[in-house]
Image (cartoon, rainbow, N blue to C red):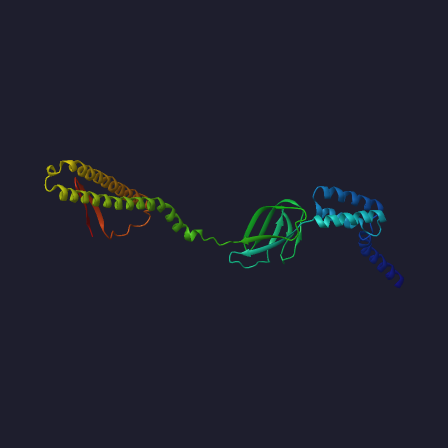
Length: 281
């Protein structure tokens, strides 16, 4: 009876250990050669991680010495060419995140980041980073030999455009209005200057010729011409001032109720040989 129990125990142990022993069997010569050839093809295709897995197989002690040396040299080249990425993930407040999932070309690269470099294949990849209910996707290009390249990702980035958008929009909308008001102010200033010149010419004419221009017929035309020119320029510049004010008002944003009018409102009053301003306070 005891012998029967020993036989049963032996059969059970063989059944349990046999698969693992078979799986751990060293590669044959044919497997070593095939792994070396496959690794070369994968290397040419830029699939460095898969090529490295094959090279690990063909450097096993059971492989021929020449094959092992060849695979070891190829592995050194692959390790030098294989790029790696370090992911710096932060939330919208600038705090570092580690509990994030990183997917590259729809294949899981890491389910958590700790600042270590992750080996990847060179080429163009679609990167997806997820964490905290947010996600970020972008296309990145990785080059051979690009070691420990930092990839910065912000999840749930807080944008301030919503709080400043109204202000920005108003500034953009009112820029033409500001230009128009500046032009109108310049016209008002120029009009006042030409009005003063016209009044000065009128005063000079009265002083030189007296009440009647007939007393100095030689200078009458000169004075009258200067007065007419200054008066015309005053009319033109005051017109520019008025146009600038109207255009500026029309370009002002009107999404809010206009503020009550305050200050001084001026209106130019001109005539031949005189000019001035009227207004209300």
